[in-house]
Every structure is written in structure tokens, then in C-alpha cells.
Length: 374
Image 1 (cartoon, rainbow, N blue to C red):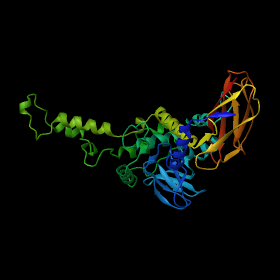
Image 2 (cartoon, helix red, strand yellow; image 1 turned 180 degrees about the vertical axis):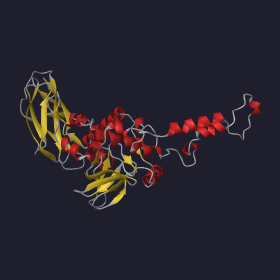
Image 3 (cartoon, rainbow, N blue to C red; image 1 turned 135 degrees about the vertical axis):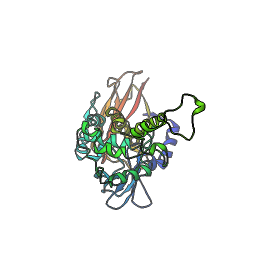
Image 4 (cartoon, helix red, strand yellow; image 1 turned 90 degrees about the vertical axis):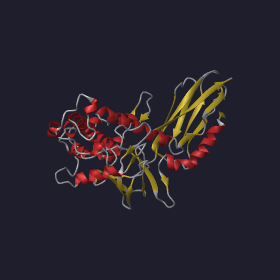
């Protein structure tokens, strides 16, 4: 068998060995401490507690843990999730036990291969998941989460949230399991807490209480003649404009609609799969075989900077053109697949190898292009 490798691929993989712990999650510190990450792009500012430590997630949403520990999360003093199994990547779906159980069963796609993304997508209608996601997105410092950026929950936001929680006139907790219409109602706990937070720097006028209607009514009208305007006088029009700006700056759950939450979750879930997928590669990129060579050929799954460990029965393989190249067998124990040429010269096929890393529900897919030559 002749494998056509790209030389720069090996260099890229060598570099990835050094960077994978930071960029792909699941790295380790100087001892046996592991580093996990919440979401693909992270969510910074969450207080996390494991069996061994308590700290705050950094801007990339990273936390430290020991194998077998669970993770509890808060925004300031507000509970977000309890007893979540700690691992290299934790998504918002992992926050709920019933969703964690559902994720263990992958669906089969049009190519008859296991595909966890279909299961993930089917769970995005879960109301508690959507409520929690919308609330966390609403706590981002900027109203719109930038592409390629995570959720940034800043200390100023957390301090205001804690003050609201400890205010006897405001809710002290949020029930994420209630129907969506109740969750986004103006009087909901989530909206009352959001309304108590100013997402501007301290001292900004938009953080002040809005002028009352009585204040506006009692203020003088602005003169029509600009020369008669007194710069030391606050006019009715000024107060009205300030009131509108302050009221418009108040965050609400309705600012993050359900579709926006689903799109965010979809991107983050795909990002996690891609990050995990970057840790694995096939022993060949392109293979070329004469039509007369019908001996079994082997293609192996390998992991950057580590030993391969796949789940039981965690390998599948197909040929996209079995009339040219046929898959013979595959093995999760050996982390490989075997194939053979079964067509005339000039044909080609892709071998799709689908595999499931140990202790993860996700299926990773890699491909080998096989050319049939004279």
C-alpha cells in the first residue's frame, strides 16, 4: 500500500501535541489535576465547586478537577447547576441529568453511521435548557455575544446580581424549569434580577434611576430659540430622552429569543465536537493502490499526544463507493479498519471511519481517500 502523506500534516500534529492540553480541554497541571472547559468558547466568571476545590472559571470557561469529581456552578450566589460530572468539555446539556442520559443514545444518519449531533439537536427544545441558556446569555457584558467569543460575566455584573439576591424585595433564586411564557414574563424572577443589573461602567448615567413622569411633567419646556437655552437647566425633552434611554438599556429575557438560544447551543456543541476531533487523526490521509492489489489494507485511528482509548463497540466504517473500494472489517480494540480494492483502475472512494472516544458520548468522523490506479 502506498500512502500519500502531506509533510506539513506531521509538523502540524507535532505542534498540536504541545498545544492540545490548552486548546482542546482535558489538559493536566503539574500534578494529576485535569483542566476542563464549559462550552466550546467558554463562559467566564462562574463560581465552580468540585469535591476538592472552589474557584472561578476563567475567560475560556476553564476549571480544574480530579477524575471522578462532580461540578456545581453558580453565578455569584445564584445556583446554576448541581453535581455535573466533571470532564474535559461540559456543555449546557450536561447540566441536566435527563439530558445526560439521553445523550448516551446516538441516532443513525443517512449514511447509516451513528451520529450524536442528531440526538443533541433533538434535545434543544427542552424548556429548562432554553431558559437557563437565555438567562446566561443575557448576563453577557455586551448584549450580543461576539462570534468566536464566549459568555463574559464580569465581576460588576456578579456584584449587582448578588446585591439583588440579598434584597428582600427581589427573588433570591431562579426556577429554570417553568414554562417559557412564565420565564420571560416581566414579573418573572429572571427578569426582576436582570432589571437590577446595569451593564455599563459604574457612574454611567444609564445606571441611574430613570426620571419619573412627574419629574418630566414638572420640568420646563426647551425654548424654541436656541439662544434662550440655559446650559444649566434640564428641560422636559432632556428628561424624557434620558428616561427612554435608561428604560431601553434594561436587559430582559425577551432580548434573547428561543431561536437565538438554539443557534448559540448548536454552535457551541459543534465547537466541542470539533475540538475533540482535533485530538485524533488517521494513519493515512490519501491512499493509492493498483487495481491488481486486492490484499487487505489497514488504516489506524491515532490520538495526538496520547494513547488511543475507544468505547466498547465504538468504531464503524463504510466505503462511499464499495464497488471500487470495500470495507472488510473494523475493531474498537485495535482502533482500526481494514479495506481492499474491489474495482477497476481509475476508481476511487472515501473510507469513513466513525469512532467514539472512551468516556464520551460523541462520535468522531474521519475519512481516508483511496485511489485505484493502473
